[in-house]
Length: 254
Image 1 (spheres, helix red, strand yellow):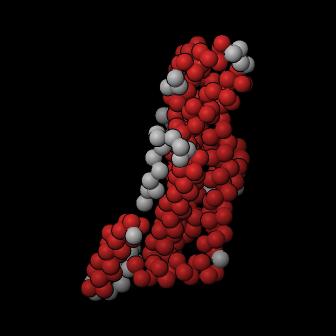
Image 2 (tube, rainbow, N blue to C red):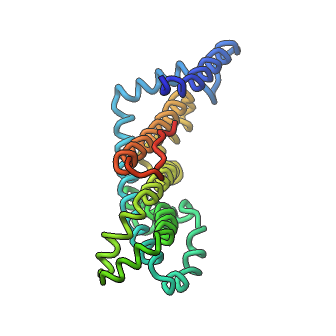
């Protein structure tokens, strides 16, 4: 029942939009009623083009997310565990972090050319920073007594990371993953719109350039549905992994 309550407002807005379009006179080259967008969505599903574009976008998203998140995790663990290393890298991080990921598209295009490599590189850069910052913060907030126990037990750096640091910081690391996954989807679609002729972003550009508003709205809805589904899956996973802990938000965002 609660899930249906969350759908009431979107359904009401779609109904109002449909009525507004039917009340106006003449077709529009820029917008389309929800009924036409739904028909366009079903059409792209039936001919397979939507699935192909989704597979291309998700492939680059997952590749860039894996590289960026793992690199950010490793760097965050190192910086969070060493004050000296954090001071030495502070200036470099603060200079590189504000660079918009899409600004690297021309450079990435020169290095990798069109295709998966270019897009994955840009997504990895974009997802590296939230993973780094949140991991470093999570490590810095670990209870000092746990680290003292690790020193008393004479654990190696690897043992300390796997037995103390990662379990204690795991809920916050899942938050970092959810944030990075959201950034990855935005950057993937943006890269495809701007310069990479593949995936859902490229399909959006083609639909816009050929004046097909119904298909454009259908693709926008599909991208939003992918983002919602991705976040819902990660929240479900977080709830399953850390259901015994009180510091985990188990609500599914809509």
